[in-house]
Amino acid sequence: MKITVLKDSDRVARALARRITDALREQPDLVLGLATGRTPVDAYAQLRRMHQEDDGDWSRASTFNLDEFAGIDASHPGSFRQFMQHHLFEGVNLDPSRIHFLNGAAADLDAECDRYEEAIHQAGGIDLQVLGIGSNGHIGFNEPGDELLARTHRVRLQPSTRRDNAPLFGDDPSHVPAEALSMGIGTILRARRIVLVATGAKKADCIARTVNGRIATRVPASVLQVHPDVEILLDRAAAVRVGRT
Ligand code: F6R
Image (cartoon, rainbow, N blue to C red; front, top):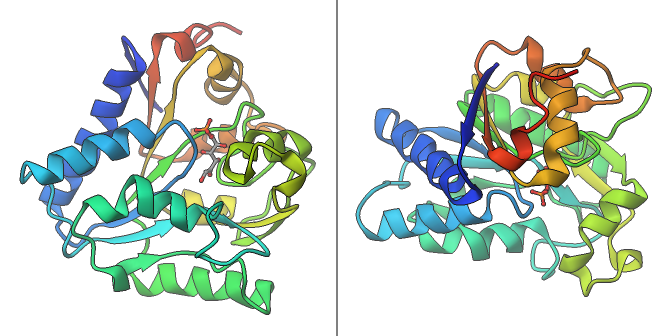
């Protein structure tokens, strides 16, 4: 794993945006895996600014987001689809037909997960996957537990994850859907390149366990240790425990 520590969260956002625009320049038909959550929001704002300044042509790129809530459709204001629309998609020249999302309102959610795996495969696989990390070590919605699932699957969200997502649902965790759909650990590990971003002191512990610790299903992000091309972009606050056990 390559660990890059930057002075503050603003520099992390700029570095992530730069990684993405460089990849788009090198490979205009890039297949990009994207995350929601608070951490990448400033990088997405930076990408919209860069696009306005003619830096970043998204016209041939495709995107696959990591996860979506179950039981709500893409037009729901709390959906990750709306989140991405607002924070990134409406500010860049992505072809809407190349934006891929799990449909949390599908009648058969297991079939929807299979469809998504197949769509990623048909697109040639993910070239660059952006990840955040939950303070419990989750990536996507792959929550800590006794086992991890390889393929895209349904997930019952942990209370802490529902609390973390409450701002999307009127600050009321009970309004956050109890279930979600998420790329699996195998889906994520098949990405050719991964960049994980984490900022702030609240992420210091899960980052230390991800990079210093043993590979454990209780720390889902620790599986990234086996991937050949992972960069972890951190601000100083999130990096304070890296290298210490
Ligand atoms: C979101 C996702 C999650 C978040 C994680 C961190 O698509 O997959 O794993 O990346 O929960 O969220 P923030 O950035 O809000 O701390």
